[in-house]
Every structure is written in C-alpha cells, then in structure tokens.
Length: 102
Image (tube, rainbow, N blue to C red; front, side, top):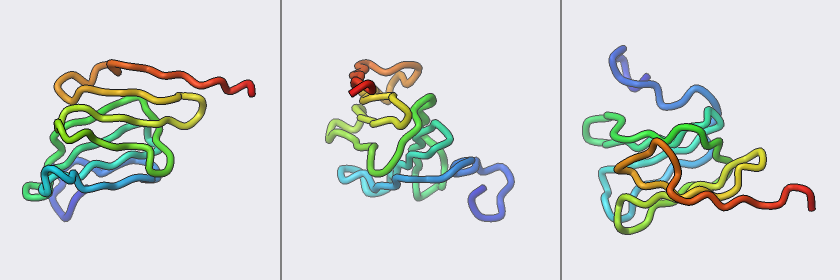
C-alpha cells in the first residue's frame, strides 16, 4: 500500500530487486520483484500504470528502451531473457532461453 490510502495498490508482495526511473519520462518508475511482476508507476499520482506478470526478476534485470514501450527482463530460475511490449503485456514478444545444464 502506498501511504495511508487503502485503495492504492501494494508495490509488491515479495522482495523488490530493481527500481529505476524511466530516463525518458522522469515521472515514471518501474520495479521488478520476486513476486513475479514488473510494475510501472506514475510518481505524480502514485498510480500503477502497467504490470507485467510471470517474470521473477533478480538484480538489475529490468530495463526500458527509449521508445517507452519496449521492456527487457531477465528472470530467475531458468527464465532467460524476455522482451515485452507495454501496449500488450499478456505475453512476451521475444523469449530467449539459456542452457541451464552447462
């Protein structure tokens, strides 16, 4: 929960490993967590603007392109690299696996 307003969404439900300001849009921050979400926030209104589900980030493994819609995530637990389009976050537009056997 943000502040004392019970209607505001919780930031995350598990450890947050990455928080960044959007370098092209100073009023937006995004955060990645072990709760398998990446969340995008408008800092002026403290509102959740976008959410990517199903990627458990670890470390600094979230970044955004200067086009403001393309996001890359690196997941824990063998997830690999995923590229997302914020206009439709239902599934990654590119999924790059890595070999966990080596």
